[in-house]
Amino acid sequence: MSSVLPGRLTAPEPGWDVETDVVVVGSGIAGLTTALHVSRHSSLRVLLVTKDVLAAGSTRWAQGGIAAALGAGDSPDEHFADTIVAGAGVCDEAAVRALVREGPAAVRELAQMGARFDRGADGRMSLGREGGHHRNRIAHAGGDATGAEIERALVTRVLDATDVQVIEHALVLDLLTGPDGSVAGLTLHVMGEGQRDGVGAVRARAVVLATGGIGQVYASTTNPSVSTGDGVAAALRAGAIVRDLEFVQFHPTVTWLGRNSRGQQPLVSEAVRGEGAFLVDDAGTRFMTGQHELADLAPRDIVAKAIVRRMRETGADHVWLDARHFGAEKWRVRFPTIHETLLSLGIDPVRELIPVVPACHYAPGGVHTDLRGETSRPGLFACGESACTGVHGANRLASNSLLEGLVFGRRIAETLVTRLGEPAPAPTDVTGPAGPSGVVEESARPDLQALMSRDVGVLRDAAGLGAAAKGVDELLARATAVPGTEAWETTNLLTVASALVRAATVREETRGAHWRDDFPATDDERWRGNVDVRLSPDGTLSTEFRPLTGSAS
Ligand SMILES: Cc1cc2nc3c(=O)[nH]c(=O)nc-3n(C[C@H](O)[C@H](O)[C@H](O)COP(=O)(O)OP(=O)(O)OC[C@H]3O[C@@H](n4cnc5c(N)ncnc54)[C@H](O)[C@@H]3O)c2cc1C
Image 1 (spheres, rainbow, N blue to C red):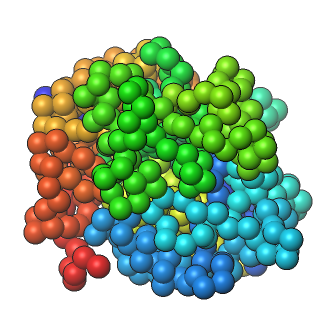
Image 2: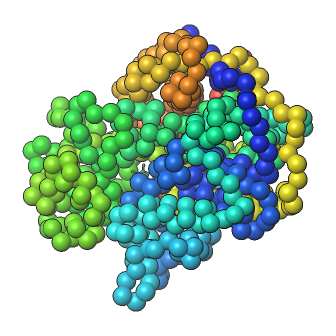
Image 3: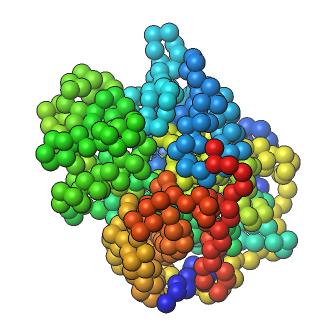
């Protein structure tokens, strides 16, 4: 059996209609940066829509910080080298170059815009170290509250910008196309906004998807509840190319909350290991020693796999993180948020070991874009975690994701300002995606999450992926005639999961954040390149492998 996915979501006809130059979907670092930069550098009208309150999203949960070559002795070239190593041979080198070269100025500008980064007595930004980085280059704020501080600063700026209009509680459903074939707007469902209640349409000259991650596809994730991959699913339905979805980064150290816990789980930042905490099993053995030259600070996928293997060997539900030697003062000052969260869960890290497991944390793949952030559909841009710019390759280097949203948000804004020039009317004659509409009942969500965690998690093989594909097909059959937020999100999760399972099945090798137990070697001859997934209007997925030319640096 092969998946037949809805070509568009079932929804009532739009009851209202608004028009703008640029519509940005999502209010994390990517969406806010794009919206702010368009408004700062042009008179274009910007509408920012977001499905919850402005502050919801992964950005505000980021703890470790934002990576950039800001320190004395560091350089973009060294940041480039570390990023390429983490990306395991399939980074887009031009995109990485843009990231590391433009990163320092972008972070400094963020500070000028009001983000209060931690600084030393000399007034310079304090820079931490994380897994995979050979230099201290992680700018942080409020100790471990970096994302919350960045989100606060950007939201404040957006609310001050008179030419950025914001609609909260606005769930984007599908993309609209203009007469020339360009993406020219979207449909969305708004809750409780007076005249704009219910399903409506936004007509626009360009659409920027900045909808964040896909973590809710899995039962265990650090991602918040809004991370349901809506932008990736909408882009697929609009015929855009989605790239590298098989690479899923599992954060190695997420607090284990017991066998029945589901949804967002609090992570213990890698920065804690950066400061000297280490992993042990039930017997107290430090099992990362000898696995990698950086031991407990090895890249995330290596640590996550080592933990899962150790759990399989010992039959344990979790392993432990030992940071008792930090003492109370260091926990309180350097990691106040994690410290408080652990205490609220009844774990005192000064006296006790912290139970940890790997959980879905970050999606390096997404809607494929070029260096300007434009997707394979003209008029449609993607930014941040929902995009695949190629900077992460097969695995993200820690703290490069906030930076990606910042740098590529600026790039997209620059492109839009140059291309669109002055405000002008949006197309009037817009249409939704072709293909049959459909929506799956919300009861499919927990079943999907369980099967994805079991069969498409840290360690994968053909049998598990085959079972996952079959399971997803069966869940797609649970159609409902009653559309609504939960059903729309569930349908998006199934769409993303189908594409992910397909890409993971196709890539018969182990690379970066994609580990095949049945193909344990990296196979550069056959698989150094990208797996692209497309959805055709008849609801079937197709994949195409695009080999990379040149040497794997
Ligand atoms: C716990 C945690 C810790 C992390 N720590 C770090 C770190 O230290 N450093 C680092 O670089 N990265 C870190 N990351 C990753 C990083 O936070 C994210 O990759 C980044 O914030 C993504 O930003 P974004 O703007 O793309 O998406 P988000 O910040 O997730 O924003 C997405 C937005 O889209 C909205 N949205 C989604 N779907 C729809 C829809 N259908 N309609 C309308 N709106 C929609 C959401 O409501 C939200 O506003 C961490 C992630 C987590 C979860």
